[in-house]
Amino acid sequence: MINFNYETEFTLDNEQAFSDWLSVVIVSENKIEGEINYIFCDDDYLHKINMEYLNHDTLTDIISFDYTVGNELNGDIFVSIERVEDNAKDFNVSFAEELKRVLAHGILHYCGYKDKTDADAKLMRSKEDEKIEMFHVKQ
Image 1: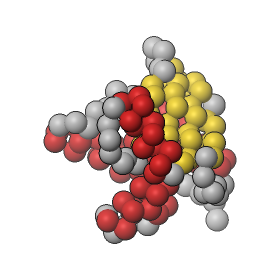
Image 2: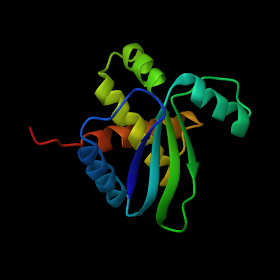
Image 3: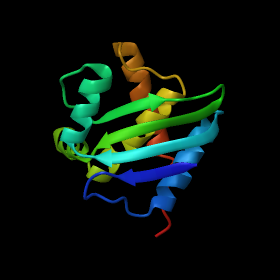
């Protein structure tokens, strides 16, 4: 089950469409959907988590805590809406596209993809693009 939680003023339009898409992303990686919680927050909220749990004194767009058991994906994914907004401007993409990229990124980490080396980051970006293409909303 995909859950969306809010620690900021932001709310996700059409939660069901995002939940359905993320479920398809999980299946496309031959994984089983467990309980995945997205927590939307601001920079300060995520910075505190980054300091407390990872000892990193930096801003970031996403932190994921992976509780996957075997092939069943479970975890908590914290997303800074402020970072997503800034990154969208920096990368000259829409907020919606950057948000999808970050949401998929968390799931892909649970699937075993890394992004620390250049080669891993390139593969991660390719997978993000592939998953964004899977998002369809009926108009």
